[in-house]
Image (cartoon, rainbow over the protein chains, first blue to last red):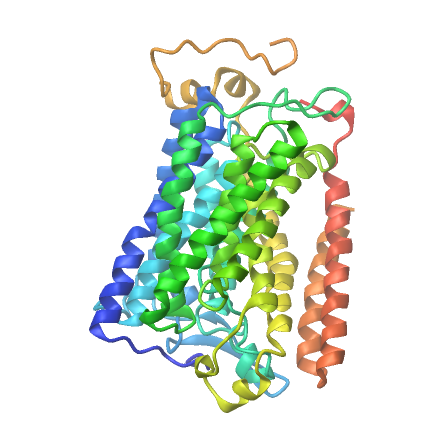
Amino acid sequence: MPGAAGVPVFSIAASVLCLVFICITPLAAAGLALMNTGLGRLRSAAHSMMTSLCVFSVAVLVYFIWGESLQGFSGLPSHAVIMGGKSWSWLGSAPLFLRHLPLDGSPASLAALLGMVSVGIVALIPLGSGADRWRLVASCFSTALLVGIAFPIFAHGAWGGGWLQQLGTNYGLGRGLIDAGGSGAIATVGGLAALAIAWILGPRQGKYTLDGMPSAIPGHNAIFVMFGCVLALVGWWGLNSAGAMLYVGVPPGRMVLVVVNTTLCAAAAGLTAAVITSTRFGRPDASLTANGWTGGLVASSAGCAFVAPLASVAIGIIAGALVALSVEWFELHLSVDDPAGSISAFALGGIWGLLSVAIFARIPAGAFESANEMAAGQSGQWLAQLIGIATLVGLIFPLVYGLNWLLNRLVPQRVAAEGERQGLDLYELGAGAYPETVTHGDEFARGG
Amino acid sequence: MKLLGFLLLLAGWIIALTAIVLLPSVAARAAFVIAGMLVEILGFGLVVRAHLFSPGEIR
């Protein structure tokens, strides 16, 4: 049965604009790949880029085969159950291989294209936390599970006209979950997968001393990291703008606001992280500043079309502080080795992004789809956002962890100790990223 | 402990979801959704504890 949310209608100009935004979105994936590689070790740099390309490809193909079918879109068929007298659309049921879509520039076909790029970004997020020790084959299988099972379940609810979006029409909770650019569907899903992977793989050799204290293993290329931040910004302009048009029905005229908000949020977050690290360590830390910037991008996504620019700055400041402080907290107190800070930037940044909608968003009356929604106004919006967060933490995280735990039993995900010592470039690919650079002994491993 | 933690995560989500379906007033829904999230935090804490390694486990 079709989802309850209305099917958006685009003019030709709006379709073209949306297509342009979607076409720049892969720059976000390029930025993330560069950041993950730069924050990893030199001896695994080629492996990191190679894995990024492979998992992106796996994600796109899995999404093409059955992911889009399960995610669905407003107006496409879906599985629904009746609970409390209301219809709960919990999963898409469109035909496989995109056979139901004419791919003619209709909103549904544009949503499928955006989804295809989005899953590529989701797939890249856990690579940051599994850097320097995650086998190529295992990461591809893990991506297939993430994109083929966990992502569509949440994305259908949040983007596909599913039960999270229906919370507005069914229960008067504002407009239902608002997640325009994917703070939840992309970033938090990927960030929670990053946490699951970091736990299942365990820390890198030499990361923790015998008494459990972490040692610093710095990234090998700050230039990659910083350039990745700029690329990611451009990609996020596309992601947030296209998402706002397709998933929350924002008119093209508000796209300037979306781009301004995205930029302000990232800038405020990056600067906040730089100030915090400068205050704490005496000098600004490049990697944490990049993490803060990314956290700002992520936090901007959910409410990018509904918050004022000044509110975006506030969201960014909080995101930057949250990320800069939590990276150390995860490493020191939770014993989580996350080389690229993916868990803080994406999981925490994403959750904050969803929550910030409840605090800062001012949704115009015209954006509501029914009189019932309008009467509820903003009052129930924060409850819808909380339920979205509860779903990510209470359903998606156990699911992702369980799937990866099972996969680890069948296909060991961590590289052998010898491979980690040698570096993944030589061990898995047979050649390094920098053939003229001599890879020296492992100064971080005990006895290395 | 890890399994119990994951079960609590799931239980917290179900509490939040059930509150929306069964309870009519906003206040009651809010209270139960927050309670569900507290159960999730408890479950997450257990999962975290299960993953804290002892010094002998360090590779």
